[in-house]
Length: 253
Ligand code: A2H
Image 1 (cartoon, rainbow, N blue to C red):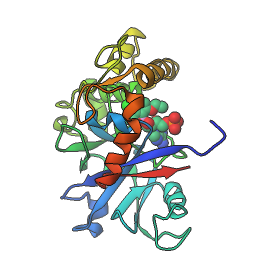
Image 2 (image 1 turned 180 degrees about the vertical axis):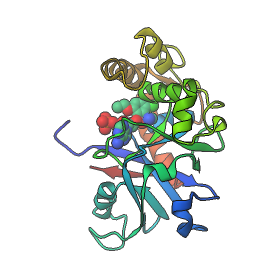
Image 3 (image 1 turned 90 degrees about the vertical axis):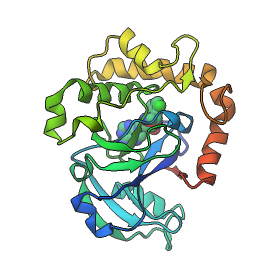
Image 4 (image 1 turned 90 degrees about the horizontal axis):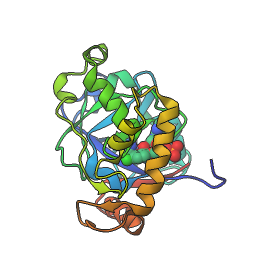
């Protein structure tokens, strides 16, 4: 890790009715699952939301953005970044475990899928970001590996009560092109390195490095307002756009 704080874009993924049983007390309110990303320019390709089944999450009220769901650790950091009325303080509305959120429907900005679902990812770290990750299988090898695991293994879906229709219709979307890797770079490197599952950690680390650097310097957007532009030229503009339309907030840790 670098010396300074890391900036993340938190994508607001709005929970849809009917709320899961454990969140029924919040019915009628605006509840956002907030996913920490370094790649706001890839939000056109979201196919689902990742939750760790065993991590604990909380819901708390923000000043401007409705109710947020994330880890307690992230809420505490947000409380020192003007997300709550009193510096450093946040009120826990309820505590849940990831399992409670699995299968829930959310609405997320920019993606072509009107509704996406909360699915299990077992490699989510509790001590990074919000503990919630938005899935972009076209450009993130981790996301592609985890989505493929669920699509290939009915028993894995069953274990977490995930219905076929929450997983099977969701395909990686071509949203940016990297000269060497084509329009679905995560799929390309996954195949090239012969990755087998989300547990292939070494190969996935290698895959991430390959895609990340190339994507940042040579990647060109294929969709949206900045179609045809290089990622490095429009990354900040896209983050600003998401913040302006109240679909995202900026967060540091
Ligand atoms: B990224 P860094 Cl398209 N546990 O967003 C595991 N992974 C997490 C996490 C957690 N608690 N919180 C965030 N992340 C993921 C998009 C993306 C990301 C693409 C390509 C690469 C990529 C869509 N998922 O990250 O350790 C989030 O996934 C490659 C590293 O702070 C976030 O950005 O460097 C990234 O990891 C943050 O990782």
